[in-house]
Length: 351
Image 1 (tube, helix red, strand yellow):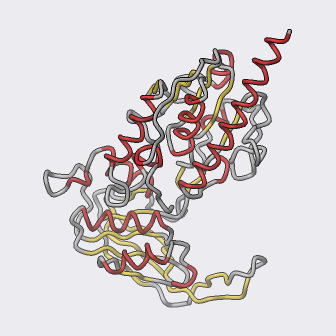
Image 2 (cartoon, rainbow, N blue to C red; image 1 turned 180 degrees about the vertical axis):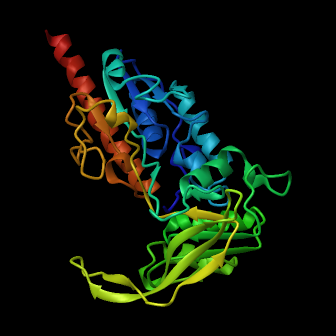
Image 3 (tube, rainbow, N blue to C red; image 1 turned 135 degrees about the vertical axis):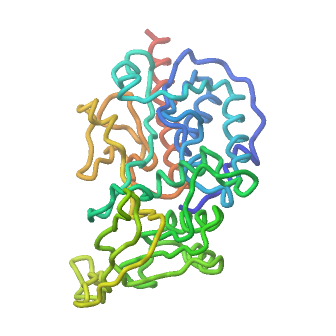
């Protein structure tokens, strides 16, 4: 996704004192939506506690976006700014496991869910369970949280080998391919079953990847990953495709070309074919209304879910969009939460 520099880290207004409302809010997830909600509500006098599943706050800003696109110093400054507003961060806190949503509802006056879309989609082909095969989410998370991006200053804990193959054509695929080059791969090939014109990544991202040496192998569909006999991926078998008849959406469906099977030698495979919301939270709170794809269903103007006092925004609702879109959803939800909490306060004061 396109990555803006977080506003709070660069052009933040000075923290001003405001009267405390006596209301408390739990924010689940510390990505762009969660940080925006936390900062906005803290500035309005509410007590805010952020629950983050990983050991470091920042969400996708910390673990999903490469260092060369968003330096970690900027993310740290953003988090520090939010902390300066009085927001408390509790890491290694998995809602649905460490705490339940119902426990938080009993403890706080409002809840915002901004857990993103971190469940990777795979290809469904033989060999995806081999060593050396990563989802893009896992690959980028390992690189960012283990600071492998500092290679070659010290040996990286993420070894990619000489040849890397990335499957997919979105911005995350470009991030993965360019990251693999920075980890020392000699050759990075990006495999996509459609044409270049159909690649969903931003044109600028594609051009940057090609300029850095990423090889585009288009109209190519992976069919299997081959074992080297020791449990590691050795190669990928593929088949060439051509554009078929348009489907109901008007998009041409790729069709396999008979007798066009071939093999790509590879040491590492990174699957970047999309991701969706992790079902852990919703599975442990069946009362939350979700879409067919597992996204939370909310009021588009306020972010209110079907549960009173529970709001949501960002990729957990959209299924995968930009950082800017997540921040916008967080801002709208924060406004709605503030209005709800202050309306309750005013009502109580008049009773």
